[in-house]
Length: 338
Image (cartoon, rainbow, N blue to C red; front, top):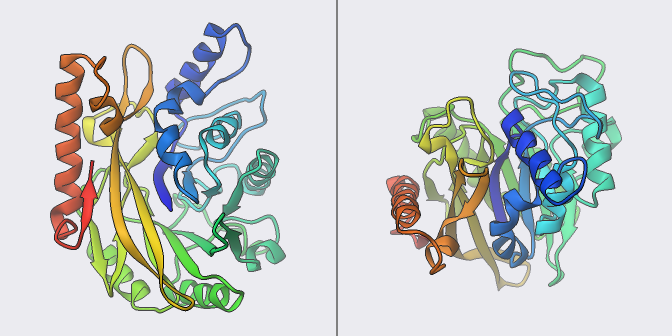
């Protein structure tokens, strides 16, 4: 199972996609060249999960960046092509465009052939757990929750529109998913403090309480736009933040360009019980020039054509991501980076 961080479509990202399409003699937007380097890692996972941070616009736009996103849905074509299976949609930007934006986003994700969880078009949809049967027949449930919506409130008539973090509700949802036949429940949490490579007391408290439940098997964190540590609690993993996957902030500091793609191998250790038996992290970097490209760092370092200057920069980011991931003892518990 592969998790990845925020897909956050800033204007420079969609402008690069437009330029890449034009370079191929096509109109519109082509996001695949930006994502191409990670395709081998995404495709080797039986289940690959993206975090769709921003709501999606109609294909022809208009598009908006921060603070109220409305992004080109053409990114979904690329996500599907590189091998993703599903996307979480609970973020602080979930309701930037209201009910219309939520419905359009989910309609477009459906049309792209991807699964989704975290927001909903109806109460019935919100109450139906997302359970994906992967190629080996293992049934994996996905849940996603966000800490808030940038000061906006969910309409009282639509309490199901997007999932707001509530620990008892999360625990109840995880239990329902296991009762519905899920072998594994993976929980995505949109939490923490932006641009802080540490963790908050609230994140640690919530992770401890959630992983104490027998119904939750893994937590994937997002939102801070930087990588945060991983930790093993109650014999199970939490990665507090995977950082950004696709982005181009107005101030593109290095830490916001680095990402972590955790890959967890689950093994049936006793009948009906699965546990992580291998935990690895593939570090990534959003390269700004000459074109915006998401770089799979271990793959780039293994490529003899990588320049000496790039090799030095890439190795620096690998070591930086490794140090952050291990800040709470992940390496001692068996997680590898790179």
